[in-house]
Length: 217
Image (cartoon, rainbow, N blue to C red):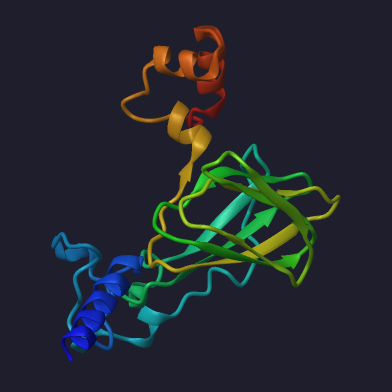
């Protein structure tokens, strides 16, 4: 009996440790971002004020408008867009690509991602911590998985627009674009760190910063 008890305790601890988002403790907990309460997630709003719209979102139905220099746009459907996702540990995104468009190298620190190609062919890949690139071309109707936290990318090498749906095991996976994180952070990453890391001069670093800086309206 003691051995069984120890096994159950260890299993419970491990399952809690390996979960990405905390397990829910009630049926629903619709997010109330305006509450001002800071927790690991959002505080719940009163059930009396919950409606079906808290669990719905139409933003993935149509392609997003691509205005970026990289030729892609990401439309998120996370807890910030769907308050009802709070504590449920899932979210989605839609990515639309112009011909030749790229979803640049980035990471999701809080989630594994699985991508389903809606239209077109995408060259996709991720890089392991052993610095090995795992990549292939995925076609319409196929899926590909990007492990949690690893740098990954997608590129539309076709001459027509492409699109994909992505699902995450987190209500708010977070996204860190490698280039933007390094070259547009506030306060800025010191130039001497970047020049040493990329083995280039300050002139080259400033040129990249100028190209990635948000355009002034």
